[in-house]
Image (cartoon, rainbow, N blue to C red; front, side):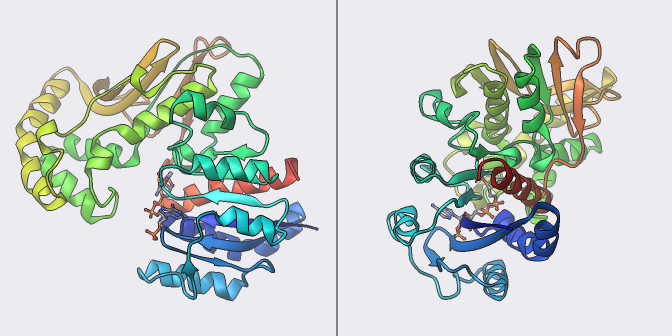
Amino acid sequence: MKTIPVILFGTGGVGRALLRQLIASEKHIQERSGLRFEVVAVADSQRWLFDPAGLTAAKLHSIEQAKGQGDPLPGGKPRPDSLLAETDVAGVRNAIVVDVTAADGMERVYQQALDFGYGVVMANKKVLAGPWSSAAQFYNHPAVRHESTVGGGQPVIATARYLADINDHIYAIEGQLSGTLGYLCQQLDHDVPFSQAVAEAKKRGYTEPDPREDLGGQDVMRKLLILARLAGWPLEAADIRVESLYPASLENSSVTEFMGQISAVDEQMATRIAEAKADGQTLRYIGRITPEGGQVGLLPIAADSPLGGLKYISFHTALYDDDQLMICGKGAGVEMTAGGVLGDMIAVAREVF
Ligand SMILES: NC(=O)c1ccc[n+]([C@@H]2O[C@H](COP(=O)([O-])OP(=O)(O)OC[C@H]3O[C@@H](n4cnc5c(N)ncnc54)[C@H](OP(=O)(O)O)[C@@H]3O)[C@@H](O)[C@H]2O)c1
């Protein structure tokens, strides 16, 4: 039995789902994979908990519960500047650092983790979609995994990696890469005004607290860029044209003001959807990329095509020439995303340590 220490950054929706899965699957993972994950540290944006001997299942459960209620980490202490320097000094070896934050600046943590011989698993896309000069080192690194950065845990990254490994030539990648925007498009199909669809998505918790983070298209752009880079195209964010679903004039208003003003877009959206429908098409927020660059935005798509049906990511390649390779399934949700993270942790533990 291999015991693998785990250092968890982030106890939001995905982090808490991961804690639940680690507790529920402990016996299964031991029996099937001969692995015992021992969470030694848990951090949120303000505090952290660290026990080199491992936090008990009861402690992890209380963390999951407390954070779910919006409380601080129970028993947590103010975060040190460098968590990993402390875990290293305490003798934690062969650990896996898990980043399920949406924080900027995690590159320094990943670098330090790899320097200490730790593995790194992330659902956070920001470093991988940052400037290629600093992101490149984390692509195809044997100790780094990031299945949940695209497709919410479906084997999208694994497929892109496989195609690159076998030297299949990828010509283009396209997909409906946001569950939130997919939901909005479905509502538009049913003639729900755009502002009402956004308000409902926010109420259901499908959007970020500030819906502009979804509507601006940056998250989709990051996913597309990660896929492009896996395909071997060292593109930058500037190579992808991004259509925002709200006007620049609403950029600086408060969330409440924004929600009050977004109806300004309703008429224009209703016209676009009516025009698409008149042509037998439907509007979908699609990302498309080739070695030359890409675009992310609302496009009219044949209603009966796979992308019209939502949830598809497809690879156009030399091997899959006449019939593109498609991955289809539920591509969003904290449980699936956490499942993808857990799968990556098992892979790193099996293959690296
Ligand atoms: N939700 C999904 O379905 C989904 C799907 C695919 C990928 N993802 C990605 O997964 C990541 C997590 O998503 P989420 O929905 O769980 O987000 P979330 O609910 O907003 O949680 C983020 C967590 O990260 C913590 N955090 C922020 N900065 C930190 C830092 N510097 N160090 C340590 N912890 C920090 C936050 O701390 P506080 O608790 O103190 O605020 C919070 O616990 C994001 O990158 C997201 O894009 C999510």
